[in-house]
Length: 111
Length: 115
Image (tube, rainbow over all chains, first blue to last red; front, side):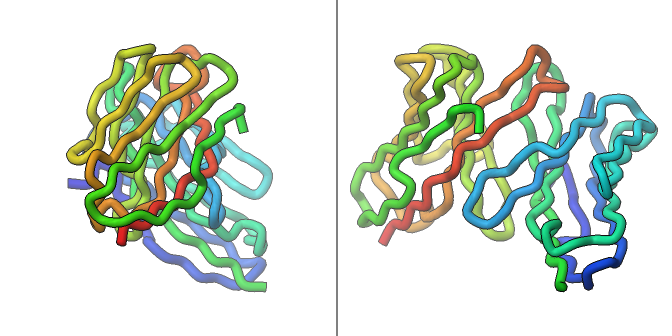
């Protein structure tokens, strides 16, 4: 059973379009993190959301944590080819437990 | 990159041979992790360490062992490699004071092929 479900799995869009990817769970998380991974490299942390309902913005990226802390979304405005990559959500189930990762959304932005 | 290196970066080996992957950090962080990444499965935790000689199993630990005799080094060993262990292996460290807000920094990965 996958604790964190990400959708869609794959997304191919044209430069300038907007998109949203989702990370859902039936479990409550104390926080959720979003990572981006480029080919041949390790994931890199983009943001951590901690409070239910929290919204964080990172330039054209907007992250939201659900009120019940069971889901999160990532919205990209005016996507650019540089946004291409694998987007992973992750979170600790409790305390000091290791992060659990979703399977990721692979985004391709075509110029 | 938080001073994480992995070696080797690429390895091809034969079924049944032992393989050891090394993760080295330069900043003395307590928590270190080994993951494998496979298409359709995402990142899965193999083993992790919370201090010298303190390790615990992750989701996919069968066929793998780890050792941490020094803070800076975390070794992953495949005692007898199988083709199902062909994967990309990532080491990570945890930086911060609280699990819920800590950042994990990942190494560059090791691509292992078992023939």
